[in-house]
View 1: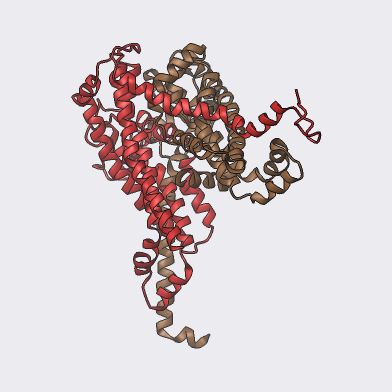
View 2: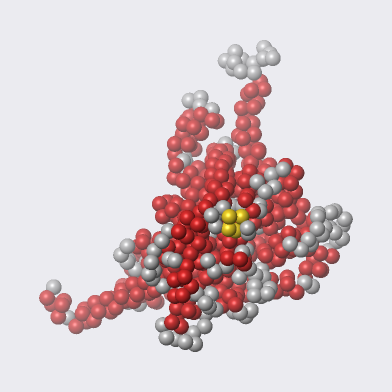
Amino acid sequence: MADAALDPEAAAARRRRAMGLAAVYGLLGLFALAYLLPLLVVILNSFRPLPEILQNGLIALPRAIGVAAWADAWSSYCINGVCEGMRRNFMNSLSMTIPATILSTLLGAVNGYVLSKWRFPGSEILFTIMLFGVFMPGQVALMPWAYILGATGLSNTTAGLVLIHTVQGVSFTTLFCRNYYLSIPDDLIRAARIDGAGFWRIFRRIVLPLSPPILIVTVIWQFTSIWNEFLFAVVFTSGKAQPITAALVALASDETNVRNYDVMSAGVLIGALPPLLIYLFGGKYFVRGLTQGAVK
Amino acid sequence: MSRASVPASVPEPVWRERLRRRGPFLVLLPSFLASFVYVAAFTAWTFYISLSDSTLLPSYGFVGLDNYAALWSNGRWNIAYANLFFFSGFYVAGSMAVGLLLAILIDQRIRAEAAWRTIFLYPLAVSFVVTGTVWSWLYSPTAGIELLVRSLGWESFSFALTTSRDDAIWAIILTGIWQSSGFAMALFLAGLRSVDQDLVKAAAIDGASMIRTYRKVILPSIGPIFVAVAVVLLQFAIKTFDLVVALTGGGPGIATTFPAIFVYDLMFQRGQIGVGAAAAIMMLLALVVVLVPYAAFLIWRRRREADHG
């Protein structure tokens, strides 16, 4: 050891490695700052009094702290003349996202089960057609949805958005579940069939108990993408029926209260919190969904 | 019901047996029909509207390609798709460059790797609406980054991108990169981790520097991931809507109009449904232009892998 410490070449190599590491952490730190800055800014400003924000700018440490902006944003702030805060929009988003997530996930699981374990002539073609739904741009579906929602009386309702997101989401969930179920050995299914188990019994007793990993990925993926969706939300709902994404844009672009950064910060966080919490607690599954949804 | 030909060991009637055999198909049928209507019928419908004389309401008088002619001679549309090209180039290249750099940095056996990854990926969990809104404040000259830097002493510093017709597109590009580079990082990192470590060791024994090892050994072996990331990001770019609405509203003026905003505007604000539908079909075509060659590439690669064994 002592020899190595005295060896000038080894010492130089060690110095180079240390400097390299310092550069790595330095760069990472700089990027981390750029990534975290916007989040820090909204969190801090949601607790700062407005006069202080207007005086010192958005990027400054708070001198005083209060939760008035949160209360205001949640229940009494005025958006386009309606002074009820974002509570209703938050609830709209919940009552849109939860049913659509559950429905599309259940359908996707059963579809994936059929398409991987109960194939029939032509099933691959049906799967390919369903897959196109993953790539469809929403703009192409706007007029047809407008007609269907109008004809069924579902325009400007949460139920209408649940319908849209379920139909659109089934493509994703079917793809996820099918690819996952392909890894379940066919022998397992065959053995169960020989023992006399039928379609649903095998699903309930064999496939579902093996499904939690993919169901978590699917639920997280569906929840975040439906919660964050904006195009259908802004086209098919207005006012009190709007989900939170559409309400946020209305809030930020309402000319009468443009510079109320404190309340708007709280509002932005209310809209961002559910997906952020899901990401923090289910990050591993979130990333898995991301890479699968992207590459396959 | 059950004739004599049915063996006694099968107690159930014929129709139930048939139903059982068709079961999987029947289970799939509702989802398939919904998807089929969504994919095929909706596209055909919108395509037909793009050939019709629809204005404020859909109508079905056939006018051929008139709407497409109107679309391509529309100044706003020309700005929109020029913006799309400009944005796509810098957004895709920038997200991939930053994502690759972050992935390589994280790949240096650093401490608290999971924490770093969490930081770089969280923008992907929140909506473009949230990202766009917050960044629009940061670009604000009276409250955001410009104010901060000037108050630190650099009086001539200018970062008010969103208020300038020429620079507003850069605000969208920067914010887009901020949102999406974590995604590129995640895919690149997965790729770097899958590289055969023996190859890397061999390069190290040969005395190759780290940069050379990455350039000559590691990056070439994850080539397909570059293609995959680029394709996904291009898809995002073509569908860009919420980010721009929240960040610039398409402005100043119409400087940052995008195809998706154009479609929304013509269909629901200006009562020109026919032209809007033509623009939507052009967006679909753009996606096809990106995705069909990619699908062909994937099939070609799978075949080649199968051939080689």
